[in-house]
Length: 153
Image 1 (cartoon, rainbow, N blue to C red):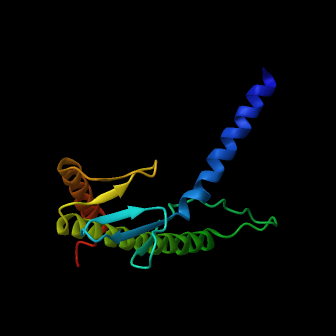
Image 2 (cartoon, rainbow, N blue to C red):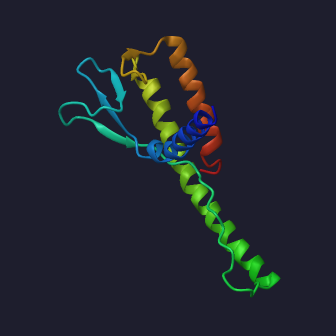
């Protein structure tokens, strides 16, 4: 019983720690077929008339290294380092927000431009979005625009 418990913990740990690496490198392919239907898939289509989209990796906290010697930085040095790290994080967040904004704007444009929008589900089956699903995706994409797009531009 104890071995079974240890094995399940090891398995779940492997799944949890490996999922971040797998999820960030997924390519998504977008193309329009001869019936003017937009398709999205993780499987590369035949031919060369498609666009490749990439996913954006989510934020991952880094472990902070402790000073190797007993010299602790002064409060001013710590504050200066904190402000520098804060500025770096804000700059990275701005880049991610801009990418999310562009993706949301592209989704709205696609959903508004075509009557039939195809998508591929996780099982690899393609189907057309119903009008209810299309409206829900459009509302979600508009919400993403309100969150990620700069209000001043």
